[in-house]
Length: 370
Image 1 (tube, helix red, strand yellow):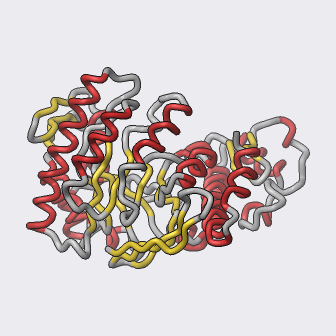
Image 2: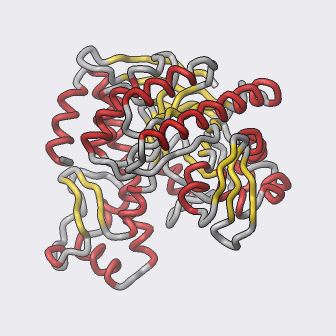
């Protein structure tokens, strides 16, 4: 993997860049749709190609549980299994292990957990997580880390930082010794919850190894918006500018804008598709609840400024009707529109950075999405 910063905004740390992987290039800042189990819920890969996404994200934990690594290995990896030929990033599954498992036991060498499906026992170590991602064929792999909940005591956060750093060191050495590091990149994850000194310490210790990129983890897990923003700014100060910077699990337009202003290059989140399935849609005029009775006889487009298939063909009244009737097409149209919005939103952000007008775009969108 190669990464190049192309444009920097003179008024802040916003930047554009280009990531090159063995499955193609990615213009940054970028939003990655989440295909947790190898598919984006309610959409097809034809939809994703039509919208124009250059990279998607899948999850190591869920793919390991089902369909299982043996199936993926027989298929020749996840790209072939789902017939997708563009770049793929996989989360390590650490967040799911700690959040989904009814019982998990943390050791210095890894974490024991029970499947959320059948209660069967499993063990993830830093090395095993990479072995799974090797079979998956990820272009960008993530290290196993320990993500804490919010709130968390400082002692618990410090223990998670120590464990995250130790596991990252094991991951790095195993990756360098056993992988084609040009074909499969490896990102480390900065933890530390909402404690500035722990964030700084974690980043500093991770930088002892030359990872392909660095992610900000453990945020957007319930902490107040002010703390999210403070920790974002603090963490980014300690990640080198020649590496891609990835904000994990953030899909709110306002928070994406804030993170871009401080230099983040990559984002992922289930939020745009999850809220779409619940009837909340992003538009150029703000969020719209398609369930609202005000839409019952509104025959205007969902978003008059959007060029997606949904906005070109259907009225708010029709979209409300099929949502209320529980039609599958409602989930498809809503999800398609929200992901189209995210793609165009990031396109506009990149264009504004290149034109030196990012702060104007920042103000425009933060006035709409407060």
